Image (cartoon, rainbow, N blue to C red):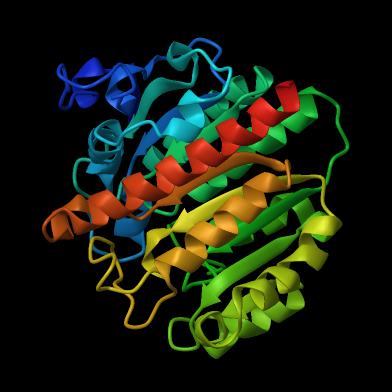
Amino acid sequence: MAHTQHTPFNPKYYTGRTDPHETGRAIYWHNVVHAYEREPICLVGFACHQGVRRNLGRVGAKSAPSIIREFFAKLPITSDIQDTSYELQNLVGDMGDIVCHDDDKITPNSLEQAQHAYANQITQVLSNNALAVGLGGGHEIAYGSFLGLYQHLQHQKRNQKIGIINFDAHFDLRTDEYATSGTPFLQIADVLGDDFCYFCVGISRFANTASLFDKAKQLGVGMIFDDDCHRLSYDEIWQKMTDFINVIDVLYITVDLDSLPASVMPAVSAVNAKGIALDLVEFLLTKLIDTGKVRVLDFAEFNPNYDIDDRGAKVVARLLAVCVERYLLLKGQDNE
């Protein structure tokens, strides 16, 4: 039985208000996003929470991609973007979703099929020299995102060093009997071996066992604790990351939304008692994009079942918009 389905771009997720009495600059993302052709940014949904289910978490992240789109669609395209040389209809494309059907139970091979199908979508986007942006289900998206980038580099015969930066309270380095939302970075370490380069921002002392800290040390994982994210200046935090970034060639960035505090992001499998500031996440994401090394980016663990007043949906849509805008501005400068 096939557990994985590809559902194509659906325009019903891109609707919103219009302002007929305003000038022509009253433009929203729903006005311009369409099925992916060769735009500089492509959205790829990963409608899956089988990994969360296997990890004994709260399921619901499977419905995340469509909700993220709906709230992103309602955001305005800023004057910064409109003032560039871009044609507005050539900004962001959407490749639809890879859907994991698991019959609401732990299902052998369902996650693995979905991860490989999603990875192939990411590889296709990268072959067009676009930024691939994954709209996740659970953090099991991370193995698929990495695999898509890894396959692309293998196809291109490029010996480039991959760096992974994870905004997360958890290492997700668990050893388990099968892949889960808690195992993706150990799976990646198994693929890369000595070339494994992994850095975590927002790690909580109370969200990881001593065994996981031991494993992170053995694997040479860089980290900034959630405590330090509140007690150091933004520039000090960024400086801690630059030594890691300087020695890699391409970056895969993953934002596990449970890195944010429960008051800001209630809509996740495992809410965070402390977390890191949304403003810091935005600051670091823009700095990372400005390096020109980011090839794949994803947002994981958004669970609409537990949202409050659409708070979580608005936060992830804002983060997506911040990254889209920054990348377009960077590429626009490169093209001038």
